[in-house]
Image (tube, rainbow, N blue to C red; front, side):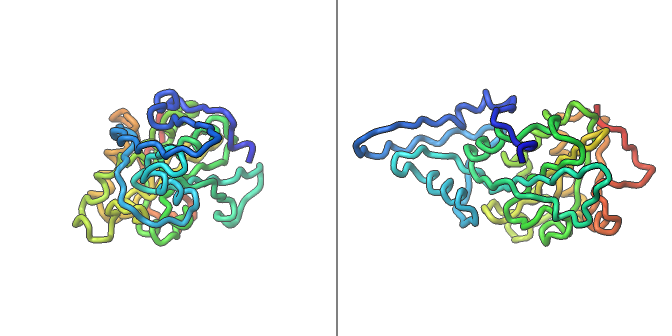
Length: 284
């Protein structure tokens, strides 16, 4: 896994995140009372820090929720995200080597449920520009068991696809990740649906929102970003996701975005193959 991870921060946002991520460690030889709880940090444009209490499967997430309620044994307070997310990667294939089962190549990296645990992972991930072709990064909601078309949460949805010329994916990928985990797609959750009917995320930790996740696929001549949503049949929801992508990535009006349902992907065994008539000019 050395080719996927780095021991050095390469995030251009890290320097601006000190107010969210910096913690102070103290060493003492005698017991001391726990410090008073810190006031809540105001929500930034990247992160939402209001959540409902919920159970989780990951030990690290349980620790995040415990710490969020106050200090325990002098440990610092952390700031929980509205949802829990899981990072995955798909192993590189060598030239001429084909993986017949897509899932065999997908490996889980880590789950995170707080701003602090996100940055501790993100700063050790190599950017897309340093990866060899035919490598994928995947970020999906913790309620999705496997980041594949057939997952029960994904199967009725689809994905918006943006093709990028080589050399610009690092910035756009980081902007997209921050927007997804920072709840910037929250307004898409109830478009076309009655709020709170249980079919869309209602803000609960384990209830997936409209955005299932996002991926970046590093290829020989282009990089491909995709944003997965839950309701392919809902035109209003798809349009809301599309407009949010354009806003958070600050895309020019001429950007070409393709949409493909997961049903179509299962039929032709391809995530990104689209009709020949579609403009496939990569974004420069």
